[in-house]
Image (cartoon, rainbow over all chains, first blue to last red):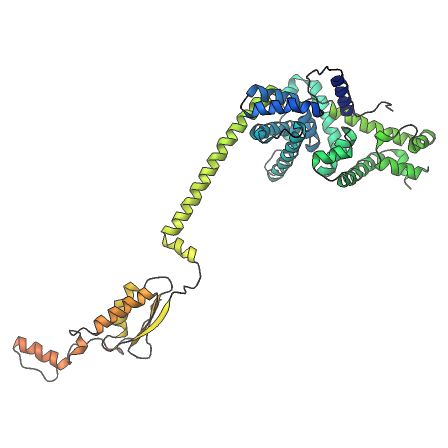
Amino acid sequence: MPTQPYISLSMRRRGFRRRQRNGAEDGAAVVYRDRSSWALDAQLASRASSGDDAAFTTLVTRFQPAVFRWALIFARDPDEAEDIAQEVFVRTHRQIGNYRSDGPLEAWLYKITRRAATQMRRTRKRRGRLALTPAARPLRDVYTTDPGGRVDRERAATVIRELFAELPQRQREIFDLVDLQGLSPGEVAERTGMKPVSVRANLFKARKSIRDGLLATHPAYGELSR
Amino acid sequence: MTCQECLSELATGSLRDLTPDSDVMRHCSSCTDCGPLATMLREREYNAATILNSLPPMSNPIAVAETAALVAKRRRVGKVVVFLTGAALVATIWISLFVTRIGRDMITGDRPNRALITETFTLSCLSPQQAGDIINPYVRSRGSTYYLSTSGLSAITVRGTPDELTKSRRLIRQFESDPQAACRHSPFEKVDEIQKRSGAPPEPNASPALAPSPDAAPPAKKQ
């Protein structure tokens, strides 16, 4: 059993703060930033909204891993998460002028990600009858040159399918943000615009659903649950 | 802590907050049934978090940014085109509604035209059919019509707008008061006058050319 905390994003955030305290920001893609980095993000957004393509590219480079990570939870597989992330940046390009720098850019991007994912899911449902089945979808070119990436993605798709397939979107989102990404319920409430009590209720339901499924696979559980 | 309480806590509690000093973990460390379950749960969630959090996006961020800019520009243009097309479509529909008679009928729908008035004109000279023929081209608006008497009365009832009624009244009066109208003279006087002009002696049994009698033809109703 791992003894260290397994919330890697939380660790990443703590590491980032430690690096910031040491004054050594490496400029790599960071998922969660604190208030001190708002100014930099706001400056990037301002330049991007005024038509600076280089600023927009920098912004995409900084936030693409985070957006992709968020999109993973709304998607069926990593390929769909890539599509959602692309759609998020299309919308970001169109709406970047609406961003007000009184809040973190990542929270604004998270809202766009949620909306884009929801809309794409509705569109997918509408077009479901005409679309190819997942098994018939063509493999992306990148898989032919990166077999390791394909394995990683298949593992991620398996995790998504096993843990989240049966959950409503809100529950899977909250479970992911709290238990897998390490945010507190208060932070999740702030980010999603929900009440903290709703976050806790959804978290309770999501944990129960997921863990009941996991526990049921263990042979000792049948004896104990009687 | 019992195994049931431990399972309940494992099923809904935060595994992150399970420190070795917590009741659940102390129970798990001593219970051979609950311990593997707790381990399994933590491992599964740890693995899930690791797999998802360490999976990088495949797309090149520069390509993503370029595509985003291109698609956003296309959508901006598309939005303008859709807006203009929609505005043109709406304008076309409105114009066609106001210009065409079908459109006007659709606009007015089945609403009763409250401006319609019904009035009956007594005829002394014209037959109802003749009066109907005279006013027919002028009683044309929606809901307007005229009714010919079916019982032989020498009258015509007109339903129409005030303008149509005024026009109908004027026309009927004009024809009724025409001194040259056939009804103003006796048929015999007419025959005599014709014979005088032609120089032939009058025939006692000659039948004059008469205006159509009100009873000659059944009254028709215009719809």
